[in-house]
Length: 96
Image (cartoon, rainbow, N blue to C red; front, side, top):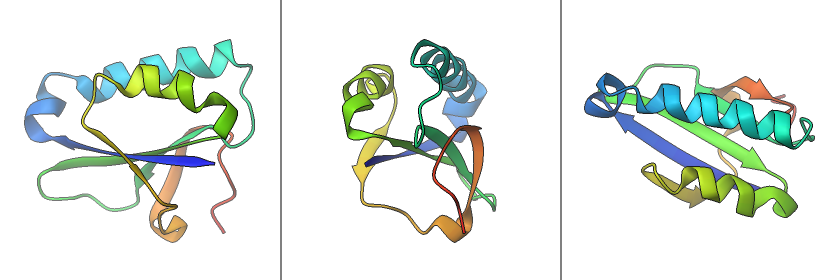
């Protein structure tokens, strides 16, 4: 499984970059028939300078997700602390 981290700054939010990502992710979910472990998450708390999202994907779909993420300030990361995340879209991994 691969994990990606995106920190949208206030300017990104003003230009609706987060909304575009969500729409593109929904399209990907439908195209792939909502596979297990493909999920979009947000931090349970607000950060001062924007919004933080994480995305998880099975390895076999990573290239499709990366094609969407190429337009955003993204970093591939190790598995985050799941206790601070909430699942927003998809069939992500259990957060317990």
